[in-house]
Length: 225
Image (tube, rainbow, N blue to C red):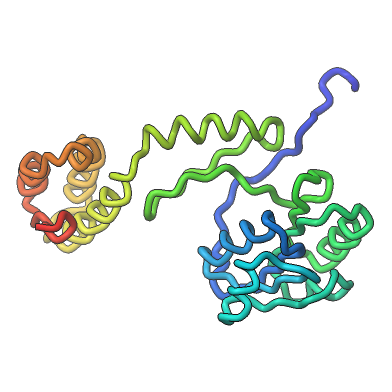
């Protein structure tokens, strides 16, 4: 390898809205099952192409949550698709899928084959509305996983409630008869306040004081009281 030659590709970070969009998953094993479940969470329309499928995938097909084509990949399977994820070990099939995806301008990810990927899937943390994606651009998935595990400790389950609360408070602030600057100042003060810590520790009285000090209503329904 020459000095300065890159080992990894350069990627543009992006979050896709796949709701109602056709996504094709090729391969019905455990990896394919994980990909299907992730796409279902994104409310995508899913077509599974595979002669076999895990019991969980078979159940999803029986329930009508996915379309299952019980056969191997064929050219034309990506017609109308937004993206394809393939979990197959056949190099010829991998290449054929990637070529069709390129021809049809479909985002393509061949699992564990970076040269046949137009996008990669990051290591992800989800806390309600909060999504944190970590990528090393393929340089070291193990490092991405280690970073994710550290962030999971930093951003605990309290962030799910925190973001619901902040959404509520933001709506209240935007409805106040204040100048844009005053609204921005209130939003900033709440954003830097240790609200996640109060939620985690159950200090609802302190939380209520902070919120009411800004002239807002404490939404007790978020805390079961």
